Length: 196
Image (tube, rainbow, N blue to C red):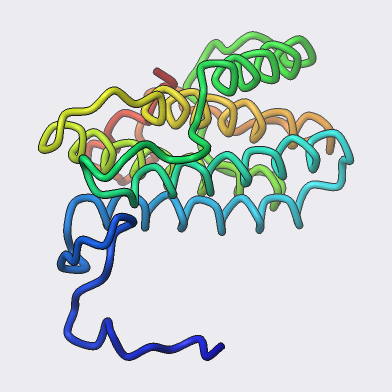
């Protein structure tokens, strides 16, 4: 089987269910961004040397493939065989709670930085938030009951905690934002993203 079909050369693609849409369709953008997030999680797995976290991230990658399948299915073409469930969100919440027990309480905004693993977790978090916004856009234009939004929201929180955990494990302090501008910088740096 060849990897290329030439069917997409005109800028269109097939959704699951056989409906053909432009490649910039809101549904394609949603599952494409989830796919991008999944690739960043693969890079994060390569950067974190911890078997338990690696196993957790591997499970999340599987769930994101399921989410992508759900998002790639044309509306009204049937339910996906496997979809994200409420229990999957709860798994993320338990992981967050477990990791946070080893972290000092937050008193300031955290700036992305520290170890390569922590930095990659921050990049993945930002891509996760973009995936979440893409799914919000999809749900707004094609209303549907989906737990994918909740999963992405909680996953972004987990990735933030993972960034702090990775720094702590390596003995590196988180860089924090004090609210003051660096000397000579007259521009407003803006407000770093908070978990939501």
